Length: 319
Image (cartoon, rainbow, N blue to C red; front, side):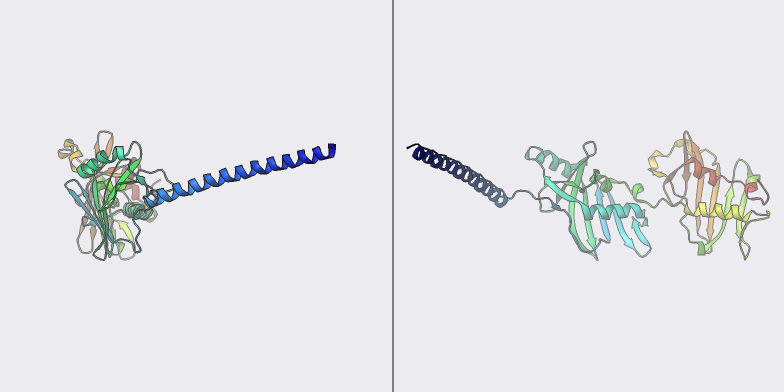
């Protein structure tokens, strides 16, 4: 009798455990089915999936940026990229192309923000048109909020999305908002050594410091001066590679420069008699360079030091 009761209790326990397991598996199956159903519903109803925003096979060779009433035409030429027919900064062009290649549509703009962001795109967004071999690859409008580092893009005929570059915290819209001066090649004397003929440096306040660099058939020297050729070659290299730290819009040019005398005036002449020029001025706490072929340049103290080298600095035997 006791043995019977023990067996009965064991069978009861096994049955109870089996029943609990069946209920657990059933509940798990229901959850799994529900999750699958939800996934199907959201997928079939257009749940957003992040994606490359501008897929293209060949790199663009032309980009138009419409910033309000200003149009910037970036185009690849045989000599490199140009912005509105002036040499463009290669680093900025590479950044633009990388931005177009790597931008990802992260999410749809929230419905509560959609109207205000679309209005911002319509009123002040930058319109971008991208071409290759004369064929338009794609176009879009872009705007953003630099403080929150958020960028919004509305491709033509598509929804407005928030855009990012995976792995980086960057303000994507910034590259599209650069003014023309931000795209210019910052090389001040971007000349070809094969066409270089001579250089003159003038100091209006101290004419005795003036000098000319000429080619004597074998090497460059300072005219009528026993020349330290190592110093002169270093100077010419620095001049040829010199870049502006930044460019000022014309309306930022101080009025005082109209009557001021420059610290130095550099002129470079080519074999074809083309001339590149730069006048160096002090304007308050800034040092500025004014030329005929570029906007006003902002110059660091070390660059001004080179641009104000005087005649005797090149004399052989000087310490």
